[in-house]
Amino acid sequence: MDAFVLPPQLLQAVILRALVQAFPSEQPLVWEDGADALELDPHTLSVRMEGGWLLAHIRVRCDERGDAALGVAFFLGRPGTGEGPEAASALAPDCDPELGERWGPAFQQLVWNGLLDAMEMGVERIGGVVRGFLVGEDGLEVRWEAMNHG
Image 1 (cartoon, one colour):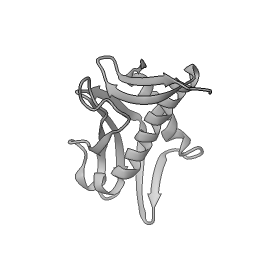
Image 2 (cartoon, helix red, strand yellow):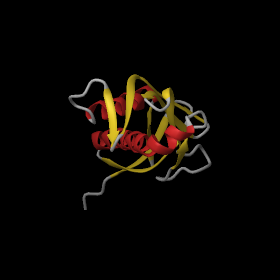
Image 3 (cartoon, helix red, strand yellow):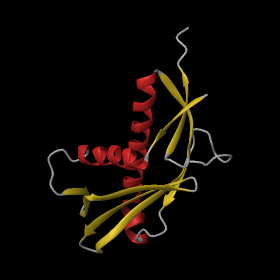
Protein backbone atom coordinates (compact mmCIF):
# COMPACT_ATOMS: atom_id res chain seq x y z
CA MET A 1 0.00 0.00 0.00
CA ASP A 2 1.32 3.45 -0.93
CA ALA A 3 0.90 6.70 1.00
CA PHE A 4 1.01 10.46 0.53
CA VAL A 5 0.98 13.23 3.14
CA LEU A 6 -1.42 16.16 3.41
CA PRO A 7 0.21 18.89 5.52
CA PRO A 8 -1.94 20.77 8.07
CA GLN A 9 -1.76 23.97 5.98
CA LEU A 10 -3.34 22.22 2.99
CA LEU A 11 -6.08 20.68 5.13
CA GLN A 12 -6.77 24.10 6.65
CA ALA A 13 -7.09 25.62 3.16
CA VAL A 14 -9.50 22.89 2.00
CA ILE A 15 -11.64 23.25 5.15
CA LEU A 16 -11.65 27.04 4.74
CA ARG A 17 -12.78 26.62 1.13
CA ALA A 18 -15.62 24.35 2.30
CA LEU A 19 -16.62 26.93 4.91
CA VAL A 20 -16.66 29.81 2.43
CA GLN A 21 -18.52 27.72 -0.18
CA ALA A 22 -21.22 27.00 2.40
CA PHE A 23 -21.92 30.75 2.45
CA PRO A 24 -21.43 31.83 -1.17
CA SER A 25 -22.95 35.29 -0.89
CA GLU A 26 -22.90 36.05 2.81
CA GLN A 27 -20.46 38.36 4.58
CA PRO A 28 -20.08 37.80 7.46
CA LEU A 29 -20.52 34.04 7.58
CA VAL A 30 -23.52 33.23 9.76
CA TRP A 31 -25.03 29.86 10.60
CA GLU A 32 -28.72 30.15 11.38
CA ASP A 33 -31.02 27.58 12.90
CA GLY A 34 -34.44 28.81 13.92
CA ALA A 35 -33.97 31.85 16.15
CA ASP A 36 -30.31 30.94 16.85
CA ALA A 37 -27.43 32.43 14.88
CA LEU A 38 -23.66 32.05 15.06
CA GLU A 39 -21.19 34.31 13.24
CA LEU A 40 -17.96 32.60 12.17
CA ASP A 41 -14.67 34.38 11.53
CA PRO A 42 -13.04 32.39 8.69
CA HIS A 43 -9.72 34.22 9.15
CA THR A 44 -9.30 32.53 12.54
CA LEU A 45 -9.70 28.94 11.32
CA SER A 46 -6.77 26.85 12.54
CA VAL A 47 -5.93 23.20 11.98
CA ARG A 48 -3.15 21.34 13.75
CA MET A 49 -2.20 17.72 14.25
CA GLU A 50 -0.50 15.96 17.12
CA GLY A 51 -0.42 12.50 18.66
CA GLY A 52 -2.91 11.04 16.22
CA TRP A 53 -5.36 13.93 16.64
CA LEU A 54 -6.50 16.60 14.23
CA LEU A 55 -7.72 19.71 16.07
CA ALA A 56 -9.72 22.42 14.29
CA HIS A 57 -10.73 25.73 15.89
CA ILE A 58 -12.52 28.86 14.79
CA ARG A 59 -13.50 32.07 16.58
CA VAL A 60 -17.24 32.70 16.66
CA ARG A 61 -19.68 35.25 18.02
CA CYS A 62 -23.27 35.02 19.15
CA ASP A 63 -25.59 37.19 21.22
CA GLU A 64 -25.79 34.70 24.10
CA ARG A 65 -22.05 34.04 24.54
CA GLY A 66 -20.25 36.94 22.85
CA ASP A 67 -16.85 36.03 21.38
CA ALA A 68 -15.83 32.42 21.94
CA ALA A 69 -13.95 29.46 20.47
CA LEU A 70 -15.58 26.55 18.70
CA GLY A 71 -13.37 23.50 18.26
CA VAL A 72 -13.50 19.85 17.33
CA ALA A 73 -11.00 17.03 17.65
CA PHE A 74 -10.73 13.92 15.48
CA PHE A 75 -8.65 10.91 16.39
CA LEU A 76 -7.38 9.79 13.00
CA GLY A 77 -4.79 7.33 14.24
CA ARG A 78 -1.02 7.34 14.64
CA PRO A 79 1.60 4.81 13.61
CA GLY A 80 0.72 1.51 15.27
CA THR A 81 -2.73 2.68 16.43
CA GLY A 82 -5.86 3.17 14.36
CA GLU A 83 -4.40 3.14 10.87
CA GLY A 84 -7.64 2.22 9.09
CA PRO A 85 -10.33 4.34 7.40
CA GLU A 86 -12.18 5.19 10.63
CA ALA A 87 -12.05 8.18 12.95
CA ALA A 88 -13.45 9.17 16.33
CA SER A 89 -14.43 12.74 17.14
CA ALA A 90 -15.30 14.97 20.07
CA LEU A 91 -15.44 18.62 20.97
CA ALA A 92 -11.99 20.10 21.51
CA PRO A 93 -11.12 20.43 25.22
CA ASP A 94 -10.94 24.24 25.03
CA CYS A 95 -14.24 24.62 23.18
CA ASP A 96 -16.99 26.61 24.91
CA PRO A 97 -19.22 23.75 26.16
CA GLU A 98 -22.59 25.41 25.47
CA LEU A 99 -21.56 26.54 22.00
CA GLY A 100 -20.06 23.13 21.35
CA GLU A 101 -23.26 21.37 22.27
CA ARG A 102 -25.33 23.66 20.06
CA TRP A 103 -23.03 24.25 17.07
CA GLY A 104 -20.30 21.60 17.42
CA PRO A 105 -22.00 18.99 15.20
CA ALA A 106 -22.26 21.45 12.28
CA PHE A 107 -18.59 22.46 12.61
CA GLN A 108 -17.59 18.83 13.03
CA GLN A 109 -19.39 17.91 9.79
CA LEU A 110 -17.78 20.80 7.94
CA VAL A 111 -14.27 19.78 9.07
CA TRP A 112 -14.90 16.10 8.31
CA ASN A 113 -16.19 16.95 4.81
CA GLY A 114 -13.06 19.05 4.24
CA LEU A 115 -10.85 16.13 5.29
CA LEU A 116 -12.68 13.77 2.96
CA ASP A 117 -12.43 16.27 0.09
CA ALA A 118 -8.67 16.63 0.61
CA MET A 119 -8.11 12.87 0.66
CA GLU A 120 -10.34 12.30 -2.36
CA MET A 121 -8.58 15.03 -4.37
CA GLY A 122 -5.26 13.34 -3.63
CA VAL A 123 -6.28 9.82 -4.62
CA GLU A 124 -8.22 10.93 -7.70
CA ARG A 125 -5.06 12.56 -9.07
CA ILE A 126 -3.19 9.27 -8.81
CA GLY A 127 -6.05 6.94 -9.73
CA GLY A 128 -6.44 5.27 -6.37
CA VAL A 129 -8.76 4.67 -3.44
CA VAL A 130 -8.22 5.53 0.22
CA ARG A 131 -7.50 2.50 2.40
CA GLY A 132 -6.58 4.25 5.64
CA PHE A 133 -5.09 7.32 7.25
CA LEU A 134 -3.20 8.43 10.32
CA VAL A 135 -1.48 11.49 11.71
CA GLY A 136 2.23 11.29 10.98
CA GLU A 137 5.10 13.65 11.72
CA ASP A 138 4.43 15.87 8.69
CA GLY A 139 0.63 15.78 8.48
CA LEU A 140 -2.18 13.45 7.55
CA GLU A 141 -0.70 10.31 5.99
CA VAL A 142 -3.20 8.86 3.54
CA ARG A 143 -2.78 5.18 2.63
CA TRP A 144 -4.06 4.29 -0.81
CA GLU A 145 -4.17 1.57 -3.42
CA ALA A 146 -4.49 1.76 -7.17
CA MET A 147 -7.98 1.09 -8.49
CA ASN A 148 -8.44 -2.24 -10.23
CA HIS A 149 -10.02 -1.75 -13.61
CA GLY A 150 -10.70 -5.41 -14.23
